[in-house]
Image 1 (cartoon, rainbow, N blue to C red):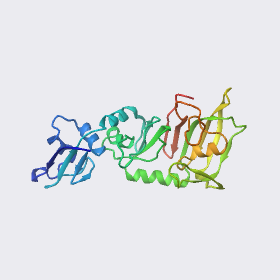
Image 2 (cartoon, rainbow, N blue to C red):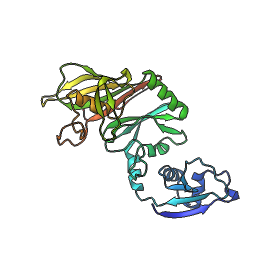
Image 3 (spheres, rainbow, N blue to C red):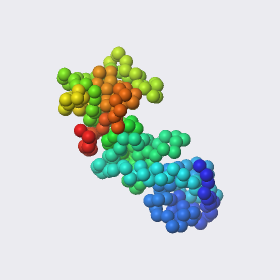
Length: 276
């Protein structure tokens, strides 16, 4: 990225937050705009990215980088919607075709980059992830303590995540896929023959069968692993419609997997899908 401007802090700036200090470089900007620039990695302090609350000190060199793909970030923020805003946790809707987390060295936008703008001043932390092609809810923890609380709930098996999937084929009955997964290959998860622990199982229930030989399934997981539902359903003989890795070349306009509900002690949120 190209540099737009730079400024060195002096003694009068000591203790000032960087998001306020930026007014010297962007005098007509609003606070939210400046915070977006910071969270999108477009503001460097002494050669490193920073957070909005960083306090300035004499000699600190602040560099503003060219926005470049900033319009993509603004577009992402417009597509992300708050589903529920609780005291310690919140959930946001992520559409298909948008990254959950920021990718190092990439200019592609993500939900994670939008969180500080959606929940200003609450130290929002992305607590779970969805595949690029999966839609649905992302859980946001407000602060490290709440994030650690969620991890403990996952480890104890007290988190319930419910997905909806449209698949090729119709199962005769409800079933559970218990196979362990090998996620060493970042592109494709392998389904192994040995059994995983219950927190990695995929429990499947038939919601609707269609005349064209497809079905709508409900899939429940606890902790989950990368591509777990996609790989488990394909292994069971019911690949998700539109899945380019584990499915068929069916020409679908999207991958039909949606995170519909999450429940943990003291918090529950639902995000209905529009295609079921």
